[in-house]
Length: 122
Image (cartoon, rainbow, N blue to C red; front, top):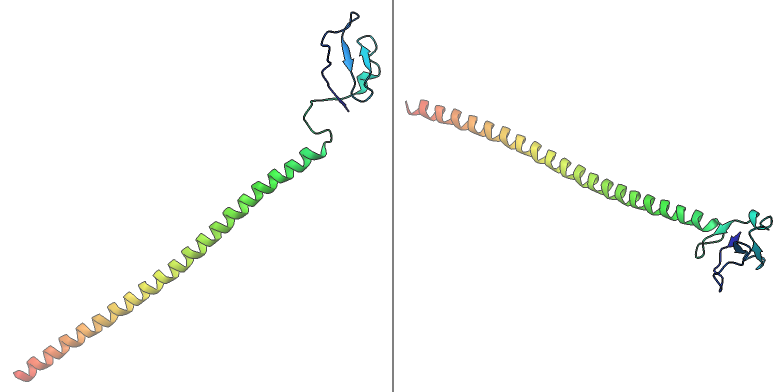
């Protein structure tokens, strides 16, 4: 892999285009490109090895997965809170029904007691 470099003198030689190979540091004219044609140009400032982008991709995937796991855990926590609230509301509904039944029985007993007292007064 060769790195494209800027020459101090930006003017090409009279014979054509000039190339500079960072590996051999030789100047090659346009007519003699057999050695240079096998090189791969890499922009300056980018990593030379292909391992760094491979490491960045898993980190990006790791961040996405971590976010998904956090959202899943938050959702599970929310669902457990909702489940406990539903259970508490079900207990309150059952308690209300029981109290209503008790109040109906108490009301019926009062009515029967009033009827008995009226019969005794007659």
